Amino acid sequence: EIIIVDDHTLFREGIRLLIENENIGHVIAEAGTGKEFLELLKDLNPDLVLMDIEMPLMDGFEATGKAKFLKPALKVLVLSMQGRKNDYSKMINAGATGFVLKTAGKYELERAIKTVLNGEHYFSNEILHHMVNDYIKQPQIQKEKPVFTVDLTEKEMEVLQLLCKGLTTIEIAETIHRSVKTVEAHRARLLEKTNSKNTISLVMYAVKNKLV
Image (cartoon, rainbow, N blue to C red; front, top):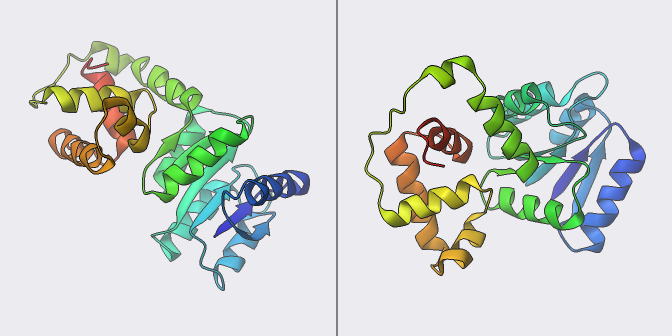
């Protein structure tokens, strides 16, 4: 069950039609502001929220943070016109688990929704590239030497490389001809070995240590 939060009525209606016509999910409500969304959340229990960032009365940053406080298991997928560094950094900190530009096609939106509902982080390739480029351009990062100390197996390294390309667990499983459970096990060990909280911090670890 999905709630769409965006201050543009036509955009909400278009996304609703796309989701329902393509059998991607079931939209149970819409909201034009973060404040209106939080009111809906008192009576509804969605699996996923498609969240805009810039809205009147209460923006997506505040709405996401308050929603995650009320319902920690709620999945938040951000739909935004821009991919500014501060936006995705703040949304990640607020509790968002995915970020897709509004220019994305229906295939990518479906992929993002399924990925996030499956418990994974999803960032479109464009956003992922922006994040990596912004990260490596930081002066302190340029001066730092790699601190790579963990011992990764050949297969773990392969999975890491594919994660850094933005592939989902299912796509990695198909690529390396292994089961999804096997890939999930590799990912879990990578997170543990590198002391990373999620896929994004794992990608940053790989960039910092020149593993990609």
